[in-house]
Image (tube, rainbow, N blue to C red; front, side, top):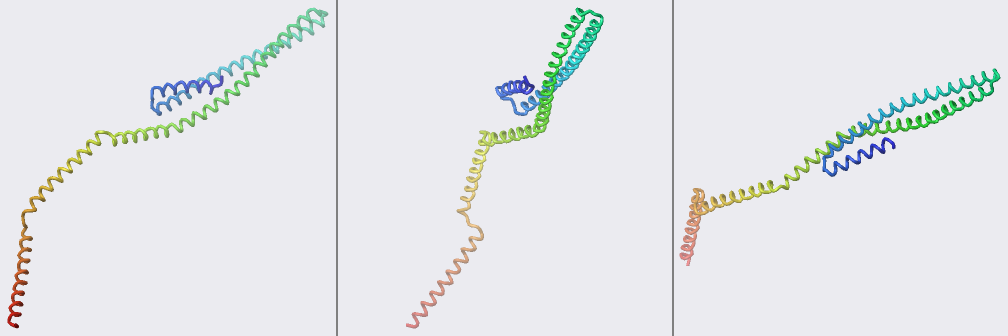
Length: 223
C-alpha cells in the first residue's frame, strides 16, 4: 500500500469522525496537517530502515559473489590435482552461492523500485503539506469571519433585539402622546402676539367701517 493510500484512509476516518461530532473547520485543518506531519515522519523512518536493509542485502549479495568466486578457484585447484570429484562438488557449491547472489540482486532491484516510489511519494506529501500550511491561515481566517457574521445575523434576528426595538416604538408613541397633550393645552390660549394681531385686525375693520359710513353720507347729500 502506498503512503497516500494509507494517509487517505487515516484522514477520511478522522474527517468523518469530526463531521459526526460537528467539529469546527479550524480544528479539522490542524488535524489534517498533524496527520500529514506524522505520516511524513513515519514514512521517512520506514524509508531509512529500507535503505539500511538495502545495504545489508547488498553486503550479503557481495559475500555470495565472493564465495562463488572462491568455489570456482577451489574447483580449478581440484582439477589440477586430478580430483574431478572434488572439482564437481566445488562447482555445485559455486552454483548455490551464485544462485543466492542472483536472488539477492533481484531483491535489490525490487527494493530500489520501492525506494524510488517511496521517495516520490514523500516529495508529493511534502508538497501537499507545504500547501496545506500555506492555506491554513486563510481557512482559519475565513472560518472566524463566517462565525462572526453568523453571530451578528443571529443577534439581529434575535427576540432580544426585536423586543428592544418594540420598546423604542412604545417609548416614541408615549412621547408623541405627551407632545399632543402639550399642543392641546396651547389651542385654548392666546399669546401676546395673537392678541396684538387681533387688535390690528379690529382697527382695520373700524377704518373700513368709517370709510363706508362717510361714503354713504356723501351719496345721500348728492341726492
